[in-house]
Image 1 (cartoon, rainbow, N blue to C red):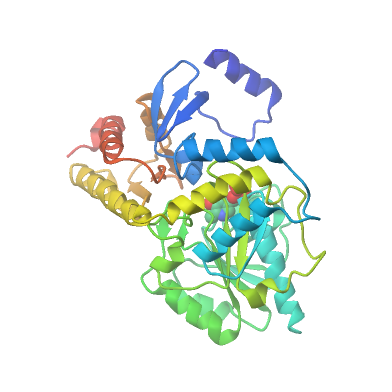
Image 2: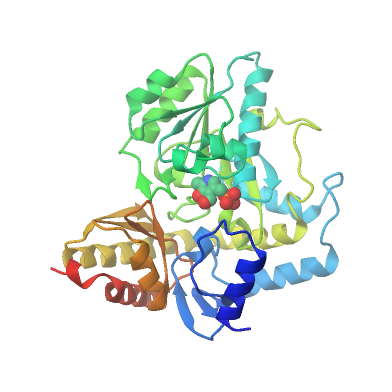
Length: 399
Ligand SMILES: Cc1ncc(COP(=O)(O)O)c(C=O)c1O
């Protein structure tokens, strides 16, 4: 099937809820994608931070093939060894404590919201059900995740949102202090706002926020769905900011492209989920868990995370260098291999031009170009991406 035919079929049979670019990908290998016409692309979006180890990583393919031969699904009414092994690696690699497995980021946030409310209610604080969330945040598309998302554009047409979510300004520690009351259950945040254009908190904001939450007995909940699992050069971005959340949510690259989400909570908090309190038919699917094991073992192999930091610096320096030759790049943002350029102009068309030139990137937040390449990207591919990016930027923005 050619691209045109594929596009036509998508339009005929799938709802139009995605603004899709006119490209159909049929194969991937490492940091490369190939379209239906056989054209090659450098993938600096990685399925929006999903292809952590690159596309069709041989060990992931082997692990999921072996697991598919043994068992696809058994039910969470029983024990499934590969699930417990994945949970052990998630727990050990993050904050310790216990893990709940689900299928996506928004489901992980739903579970975290329920867990935080249940833990708080179990302590006799029935009225403390509110979540403090940040302007510009993105936490998913189901009603819990959507209500927690501090961007009205995502709510439009879907109101009313769930009660109990209080949005405060980004980067304003006094606003957080004021917002925490006897009704507060938790503060939910992304260590770096991803969808909102790789937006970093002011220095020390998260440390201050943690201190205030501890003082007030409010749960400190990190959505590391985009920032976690090595993306910033540490297993969790929270480590890079010197904070230790009570609950962490993960998804995206956890199973390198298969659907798997996780909530990790300190033992004491995790205990609030007793039998029957929460669940999922498919959550912790054995094939997804087999892939997650390879991802987690790779992330903790010696030197892997240091390499992410080194390659992140290489890419960042290249972007900064590019910015010195241009009038239309305001700043470079991000950490590790979660980077972005904030521009003076809208970036949608630039992202399309990148695509035409063979570089997959993402325009977000109006004037931001976001880069989330596989963590296994190599130096040559980073240099090639910089060349393609330079060639895709508007001629008018050169100095
Ligand atoms: C920080 C964050 N939280 C939650 C989500 C929702 O994840 P999913 O699309 O898997 O439901 C995303 C997705 O982009 C995200 O970036």
